[in-house]
Image (tube, rainbow, N blue to C red; front, side, top):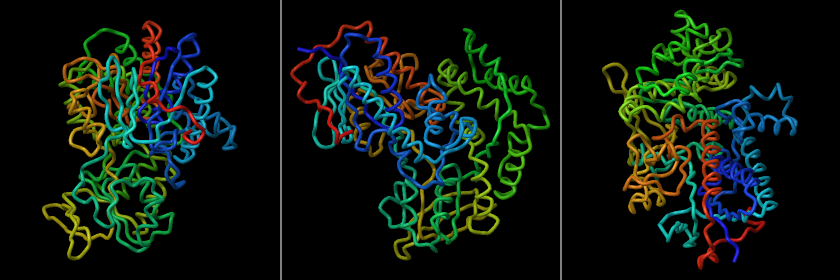
Length: 515
């Protein structure tokens, strides 16, 4: 009987695609190794939820040069764009493309990888149902899905995306409430053109929702609110070249790493790269003088200033990711509590073109943005949503016909509506990390069970946010996926293959309709 090693990848979106490709490419060197890979995802493979078909107003958070699905080939996406007539290599590198275009790229990339797997003799199957449980079965795992099917695996890769947010669970099911703005094309058909719309959150998802609604013809007033009222940074079309030598030295050394030491190193990198005291107010700009004033200043700075602080922040990503695991648990917790939200709002950026569109909506009174969010409830008698917002010492009430939760994804795997997470926590196979996601061994990338032992379950994306830094960044996640796949390949090269057993018939075989 043919021997094989069974791998189940739960999640066939961008991370599952990137991991699967690295696994298949690496398997070229594993002559005699027979793999059987099952991809679990109720959606078509490749785009996943974030990169499904949507409005062209919904752009990637990173330019094409930072969006390759292959860590070792940074210009893979750029070349794909060139081949399809989007421009020259030089032209596409700095452009922010629609998410739907990236979804097309991932769809083709997954199809290419499946075809390559077939040529290498790797069996591939797609379970087009949601995985709802993982249990031990002998030396491997038993995976149950929403339709009662069972798949057996020797190794599991968990990359199902972001846990759903429970921030406004009390509004679910109310007419006019959207617990996620994506795809934004669902918003305009469900919201009358002149209805009053409240967007909860003032970061990138809010920008996507507001612009998509306006471009679809919505003319009612849109109001966005959050506790801070902060908007993301406006990204310049070109960035200053920087070298982060201090962080690279720290990453290569064995010196103790503390949060205080990292703060010192960030300041050192800034000044070593030509940063000045005069530019620092730009780095710490807030919206205290109003959103319109903030955008005027941001657009001016993005157009005319070198913004060395932002280039340094970008350049530090790889080194900080490597150093994050060397911080104590207390330091990581302190960062998450004191600096995380501020770091994200100054590190997250949106394109200059979209910043100008938001400014225009503000200038014409079609949009308002405010700080001071307190609460929102649904009034069943009047059938409206009521927002409580603090302005100075007073609490103001405002009524809205529709509410869009654009506060972003959750990170808490406990107590949510996801059956898979509930199953893993109930059986002790996984434990919630205090900083979010599951507890993961940062060295191995494997899930840590309640007994403190590593399971043969690789964890990627936001589900590993307690172990890794900035797991909502596309390029960071692609890098971690490549590393995890390489570890699995190294493990396979030194481990005897598992024999086929009586459960083999439970696996699907590949067919055209499921790919």
